[in-house]
Length: 338
Ligand code: TRP
Image 1 (spheres, protein in one colour):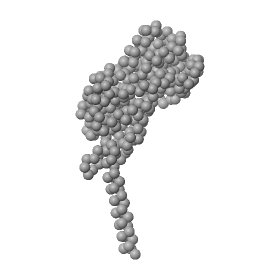
Image 2 (cartoon, helix red, strand yellow; image 1 turned 135 degrees about the horizontal axis):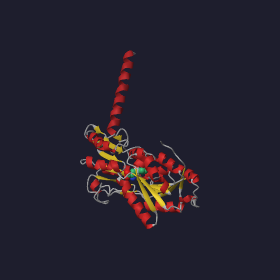
Image 3 (cartoon, helix red, strand yellow; image 1 turned 90 degrees about the vertical axis):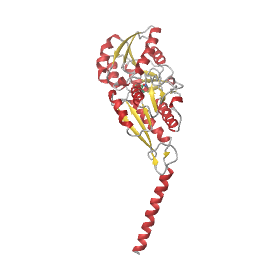
Image 4 (cartoon, helix red, strand yellow; image 1 turned 30 degrees about the vertical axis):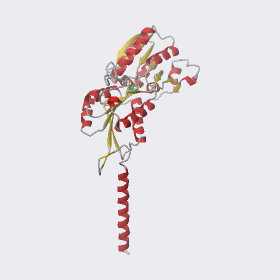
């Protein structure tokens, strides 16, 4: 009887091992490259410069969409990196990633993409959420990037946001631009904002925020001489959005901004893009490049489904009358991530 049990046991173990083996052989289908007898996992690095609501949403969407496209744990390894606001660390983050046999790099936001452009020359790079890839020096041309880097831009309609600002607060005479002059994405958007203001008889003042910790002092330097603030999708400011929003709210001044996440954290309004759409587009482009498309010939893509977003907690606090047609905008209430 004992002998019989042993034989049954051996059979069970054998069939288990066989099933496992058969399953692992099936994994060579899909995105994983078959390198012969062994299955090699695709390695995808996703890098962000710091934390704020929008970048986290973009990162999480890219990861979820990659999984939906077949880059599941058994077939792919997704390595997540974060410079935590210390942009000077980005070159060494890439140097160390380069020793890990990464197949494709996915930098989120302009500073991270610029660092990838200089550090990575032998592997494809697909950036996500870069406001102005041309002025950031990432690509030769939108339709023919020319090198090993392409991606998805989150170019924002600065004009439309400022027009919306005038509609919501017709009394605006002077607007304060609060941003980091070190972010190419912000410099490019502020140029557009200045042009709009010049053409529409609005004066402006500027305050530089070199690091999130400088926000309070920067806002204080202009708050008494402006009627409202405008900040594009600036990473340094977005990372301290709650502080900024509170300062502005205490002085009863609205903030118009570049992203829905900044409105959720206390800005008054934006005409912004949908970052879930952007994250999904990014993952699809990563998949396309991993399947053989060349970054040099893969045009930069844009998200163009803009939406008006208003924070109704803030509009109430500032006594601002909302557009009569509520279907015209998305209403959000205040979220606090700090
Ligand atoms: N567009 C920004 C860049 O080019 C990144 C970004 C995406 C962002 N969403 C944002 C910045 C929201 C501030 C707020 O770097």
